[in-house]
Image (tube, rainbow, N blue to C red; front, side, top):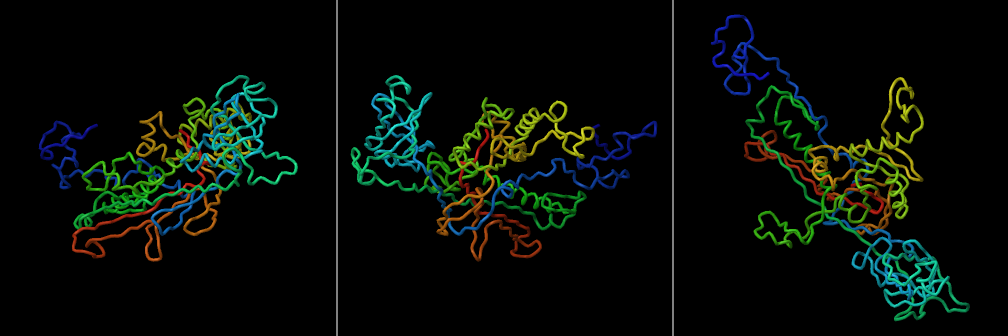
Length: 499
């Protein structure tokens, strides 16, 4: 029941000896104090009603950390080994016009159409919806390549397309070559407007810049010396009866979460953005922050990786159809066998239900997992991993996607664009490091922070003011937090974002 404050204590006579609202002290109204004769039962320990409130820890599980001493990190990734193109085929003339490479990259996205790699006498596999065949390159005029089928006169004949048409999204894969006897070699053979060229590796580089993140806490000297009656506690190990310890610890814990969330969610600044420097007067002065922003994990996967919205578009992890589609996409990429899935609660439970329904051990397809696998003792309805095809998946709940104060709240508000999980490859990748000038093996995810022999900006904390160690004449304690770092997502084509 509600507690109603009385006026002057015990100034209201009562006919019986009993506890009344007028006999209680209201410690929240400010009208009563500790001079009253009734003492409440004080629970000094602050209740932790939200459990562990921090969400950091994801990057420490799947990545590594490494120092850098430049304003940006640049790395190169290998391109495809084999020649494969997508384009438009005029079926009755056998002319194939290159539009993109097999990954859908077009001119200007690290792929130059004029360097498609198909040459005179190359033997190719040609495919479109419902049919495929083998042909040979007989003429190359820039992006226009004439590919003559072996089995018929044109690709408009059966058993190919069967009619004259311009066929978009035709895939061509070079499987080798077939030359005449006594030919002088491949180089220098005239083909249309040019000559055969050597195929050179495509240099594909990516870059990212570190973000400077800051936070701050301040308390006056008088408040820092004041002891409270509530015993505080927090994620940073703070405890005692000094309230500012809790505030300072919460600030540190919140800053640690901000550092991780920025590495996950950050985006590079687009030319359309009107973000300017603090204090800027012209909101269209994009050039003032031309280097602002950074590429976080989600942004990197959306730009260079794979997306899945499920077979039905709404959390289709309840059947294997979505996972089979994921495997098919991974087969096209690096085919990393071991993958870690970090998912929200709904997706995790849907996967458990899917796997439990396929398990024939036990009544109703349930699994007995603890207490020596005893049916009478306990049921384990959760799965931490499973194998499909040649791929192993290890599942873990990700608090960041569930907490209503972080991405969980965004997922609730934007259900059609919610992120329900991410699939991260295990192991390492080999890349060329521009700063070191050599190939290195690193985890697919790693954090780069600014550091030198005299200064490390991985996680800086310093205190100023006159409380404790005196550094200035300010009658307060100021705690400063700073970090300068960015996330490097190597081989994003091996990642999958589940939306």
